Image (cartoon, rainbow, N blue to C red):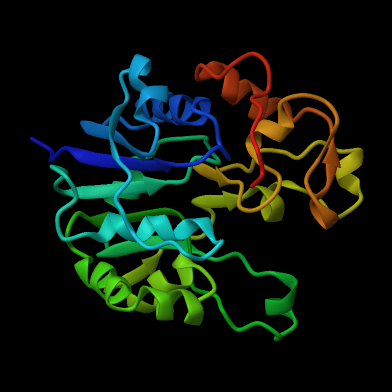
Length: 261
């Protein structure tokens, strides 16, 4: 019998309402046919209790930086509650478009998105092209060195590395990247050139299994009318395939309200 796998997400604070977890759980149930546990590590389990979502407390870890993602380092504790085996971590702010089995079928010790290039990278002004931690797979307890390295000098780590994904890219053993196109960027792969976003609705990329909403906009901004996004990634109006996804997986009929702290 195939080993049961884990799909893990995290929710803390008020940036993303509980609907994001409910929608993600429904999407995973539809698109992952393997036996699996869907788990949310959270500081507010009561918000998810009525939905039958398995929750564990958000592990205590130093996060003195304003960068929220440092909480993810807790996933690499030598023992993470009673979880065992392979685990796929998914950020809340993404859209699942297709079969997720490929994320467990792919060979490798630690698989992560290769960060999408920004203008500074294309101009040679920025050299970083490591991992984007919106979607990564690891074995529970198999990357304990990442956790230990951070806990030994968390202040130094947060001072030296801009965010947790850069720290992770520098310390994970056997790091490799998902194949191109498996995970798409909403900003890079779905939107055209500015200012076309105001006239042409972003389209869902063919062949991608997940669309990642890193930075701004977030999925909930695209459910109704009005302006969304920032700077060169600003647009207008409802994006129908994002709204269809949200409603199909049990999201509220009205766009959820979320803070941007």
